[in-house]
Image (cartoon, rainbow, N blue to C red):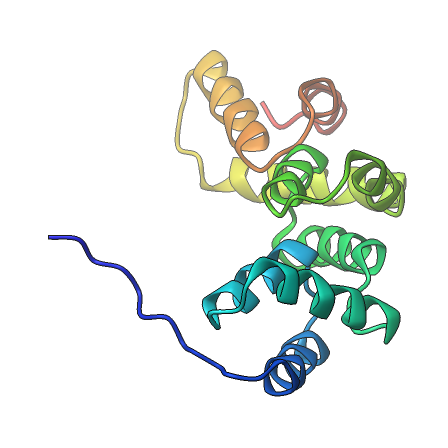
Amino acid sequence: MDFEKPVKKILDKKTALAKAEHYCAYQERSQQEVRNRLYDYGLRSDEVEELISDLIQNNFLNEERFARSYALGKFRMKQWGRIKIKMGLKAKKVSDKLIVKALKELDDDDYMDTLSAVLTKKAAQIREPDSFKRKNKLVQYGLMRGYENDLIFDVLKSNELL
């Protein structure tokens, strides 16, 4: 059995544009998210690209603004590290240049403070008497959250979490 999601067919581009504008106004979106949504409406590729162009011209869609918003949001709200944020942006097909620009928006002091807080909180939850295993668990947790290996070791040394 082949299960495909039903295509929401919108006959005219004007209606699709209005829906896309509403979709973009609600929250920052990547071009790929909007493109996928427009294809879900059953539009042809030339119509989709034309609507994407209209959305960019009317400032509903701005890839740089999306990348900055995504990076800052994931860092502040979910406390993700740069590596995980970068992977998320790549999954949304944001250009490498914009990813670098968005990651530069993250303040280094805030970044280190957040990493320290994340590892301190996790260290309090770990009930492992063996310091080697404890350190390994903290490093793995930091890596899973998307933080850089060398920064994790720096925080573990300076905060004496072991």
